[in-house]
Length: 582
Image (cartoon, rainbow, N blue to C red):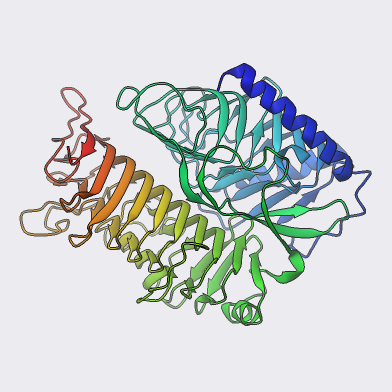
């Protein structure tokens, strides 16, 4: 898309949003009664003095700016209208617009994520997000220097955006259902996935940039530049979102299922879908609710809205009813206390789990989230189960261990952005301390993943047993800390465990845009292959790269016996395989 076309599109959207804003203006609103979201959800109205809003935002940021493993969680909610503010977004902070479309909430000034490490290094800038509003940056460019677990959804930037801070390192990232009027400057971002978004232009590339359902992706072909382009998104339902209408009624919008889609959902001003009144949700609080109280409400037919906080669970949250919504605000965190799962679901249609961080507990769990029963045979093609912005962490905030973080048994499940992380730093970290065999195990058929980030687990990062699976973008660091090769070996004669493993009996699987990296901390440890798959006509991989980020060890092949080894010295070698089978 050229800039003139993007500008014309933006003007049309703004004109439409101004018409909608007449109904959504502060003067038109009845007094909005905030539901009991607790003290860590801050609701802002454009009639409030900007200085008062700014003071509250600054207080939150003072707590969250450096709180990588802290316990506080916050959501900043903006009612429709115009704001003039500076909004820094820190750890475990979610900023949400409550209009029917992003232009209903408009912030002039600055909304930014800044590098959390010295020297403009954003490689640990995790767990924060913005959704559902528009921004006019004061200097024309919004800085969004981020890495993993940072949702950027339903946004409209009336200007440019950069995905780094002054050229510093960054390891993101995710963008969906968003419009950028000007340029997206990726800069040194290692990798990035953009799904169903639009912009005036895109510049920058490093190792693995994936574009799915983008009407006008940047010019160039993999590997120089490393652009992987998939014309249409095969199946997606955008993430459900909170909204408040002109009468002050709160609800959750559940976007409609789309197939073979391109671009944003809100060109007409309203995202197609259905509206669920907030009265149909049980609003949970970490300081009051247990798994038992939440399960009782779910059993009575309620959906579940988790307010910000850390929920210590003595049993799993059980989702059994079709079309149940389980939505977290402000990176609400579920943590098992007794070695159980955090969430289990029945094998039923239309469940949607969104916006939740799952922390492994000190007592090892067999699984943190299990979708469907062990034997799940139903088809959900017409109404799939969705997982949006679900994040997993084993260690870092404290001791935490699990066998499998996410196990998907139900057919047709769609994973729409996840980071499944065994901590490499923080508290309770070590080869024998924070245990985790696998990040993701897929047993269901026809499972689709967009934005699959899986790192540092001790066996296969991803084990895919089901047929007809699809992955669009994969980023993985293998574990840093195997103490020696015997501790890190999947079979005799095979060093390490492949990052992405497709089971030997699978006959159909396809993946696009995969980057797998090593940072071995001990000598004489290597990985035989980054990707391990059966040779079958229906198993196809596109655009793969391996990188050694440190001077110890190597990844000997990219996929099976193809690609050759990584090197750091005397010159960096980053092996690439364009297509497999070749």
